[in-house]
Image 1 (tube, protein in one colour):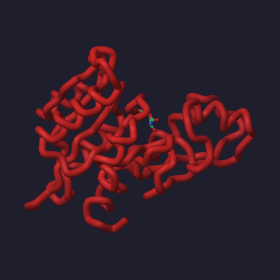
Image 2 (cartoon, helix red, strand yellow):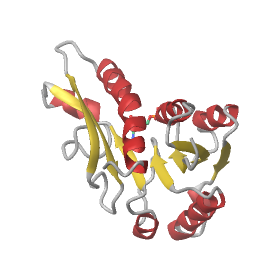
Image 3 (tube, rainbow, N blue to C red):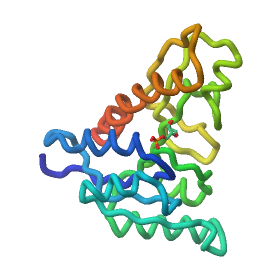
Length: 193
Ligand code: GRF
């Protein structure tokens, strides 16, 4: 396919959603290619996985910058050097400032392990279990200035089973994350959202 959109991924850790996007983008008819992976943690295992696929990688520690703005401006410079059209957050564990979010508005998406607007923030699986919910899931959404508040693009639902632990529930949700994230990115770049 010609004219595939160029995508940069921001990670902080293991990068399993990143891997799902990389795998999907290997299909010749997938409308996007992953051109760079940026981590705010040098030790993020996802960086090595991306590099093993021949994808450009970089790590930038926010603590090395005098301000969050300068850190985020540098991320933008890096993404622009890769000429990315879209940005995917995949387990990027930093709240982003308004300038950065506005810079990529409509072109930056995130995956969150809950049925937003329910259970924004961290520890979603434990909170879902503690609340006795019977249903849980994940959401791909646009990134907007409020945490986990951007408009939803795609959701998947899973049952919460009586004997679920945080681990079993997280694994069931994660399998759905890996399914819907590539699907949502495809919809976005094809203008089908
Ligand atoms: C996923 O559960 C994702 O929904 C959340 O952070 C986790 C990242 O996992 N935003 P991974 O690095 O993609 O494996």
